Amino acid sequence: KILVLATRNPGKVREIKASLEGLPVEVKGLDEFPEVPEVEETGKTFFENAFKKAKEIAEATGQMALADDSGIEVDALGGAPGVYSARYAGVHGDDRKNIEKLLKELEGVPPEKRTARFKCVMVVYHPSGKWFSAEGIWEGLISLEPRGDKGFGYDPIFLVPELGKTAAELPLDEKNKLSHRGKALAEVKAKLSSFLEE
Ligand code: ITT
Image (cartoon, rainbow, N blue to C red; front, side, top):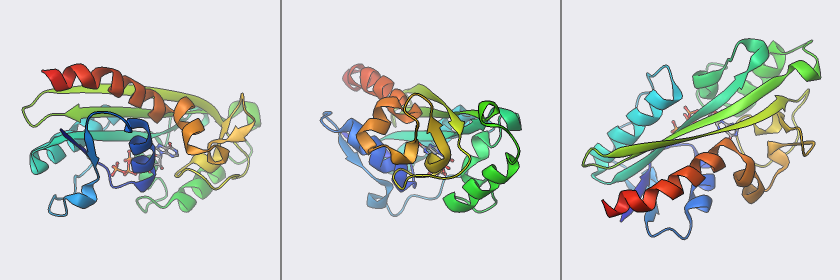
């Protein structure tokens, strides 16, 4: 059985592949399907985008697909950037610019008011039309300045309060134990085996 990861984000691919290791499926990246077209993210929710990506990639490849739509919600900004996290500063996937913009928007906001959470919604879609979803949330604080060089996206400014470290200071396996994506993946793994039997 083949499972295609419906994402072009290499940070997500690393974390998802590490977590799915040992499952009775062959995990493939989109780079192995150069002919599939880009999926446009037009949804207003993480679920809508994850569903659209998983369905379109499953239909384009004829294989089971797993999509991840995720982002960060900052309370002091009314939940922004949310579903627009990847393109917050205008250029899709420019992590450095996104971090810069978020820190600027939060200038003057004291540490205790910098509460935020990462959210991840995953959809696994089978070309037969069957699907299921899973999700995870990771609560934390936006730090005053970036720290750490692991991970991706907003990890350097996402403080994990109980560790006193940013997500970018955690090795991949430690991040996967705590993160929104790690939690969604645990749910995917629990549901996948019965899904494969159907
Ligand atoms: P695909 O749609 O191809 O999967 P993408 O990067 O465009 O890739 P999203 O639209 O779901 O994916 O945007 C997610 C953004 O949220 C991502 O680019 C990061 O900026 C941020 N993000 C999500 N999970 C994160 C994590 O674990 N650590 C840091 N930032 C994260």
